[in-house]
Image 1: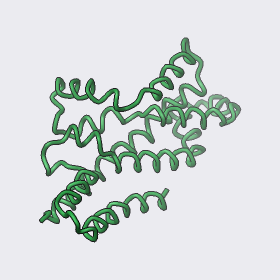
Image 2: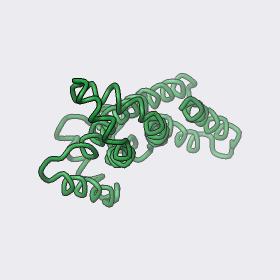
Image 3: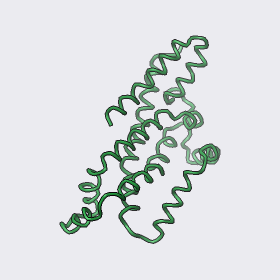
Length: 200
């Protein structure tokens, strides 16, 4: 039988990874979005288009190169490959740029007249006006990280480091014909996502 502590540990593992990715995207996404939306620098539009172009590359194409890269870094069987590359997702940058672009320039100009630094403008003007953006980004990022299956399947080897989707897959293999156990595990895996949704 599947040890209950393994399920609880997997829930904690998934939560920590999803939390790290959510916080990272809610910080770095708006930072980059603010730069692309409100600052003028050489090659700004070309860099933004290059970032958007990376969203068109299927994730499966990057599985083997990513695995080899993480192996060379010594990151296999750790959470680093699941967290570090996704701390500033392209979707978060795109969403932030589109939202922050609609914030009136007059508010930022007024803050500059008052002597605000760029960091203070970002923290005291842009971020308070970006609460809907942060809520949306938080929901999407947490949901995507919580349900991530293929990345952890390839990277993680130790059962103690498994995320919840991997343990749910183990339920299907170890409890064949016992749909009640599988459904109980699936139901428990849904609760944190519902909680995050209602919080945000």
